[in-house]
Image (cartoon, rainbow, N blue to C red; front, top):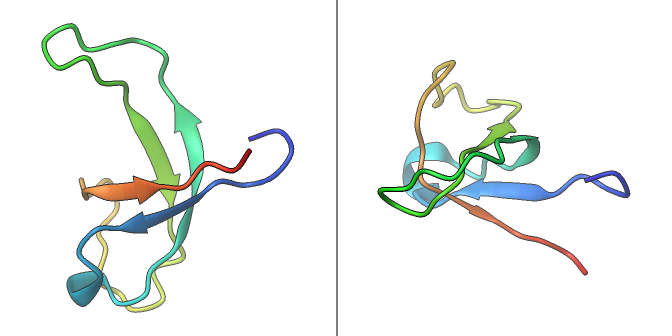
Length: 64
């Protein structure tokens, strides 16, 4: 994240248009019931299809 922004895309592209956001927060606390961590992304919301604080299944692309 220090070198460049990591792109995030909602999994349901039909519902959210071609929305593309950037990863803005990583919570390093692991949920012991699921083994997952929480990530947050910011989207420009060009198509007015996202609500503030909305939970969306997304794909994070990490570059090496």
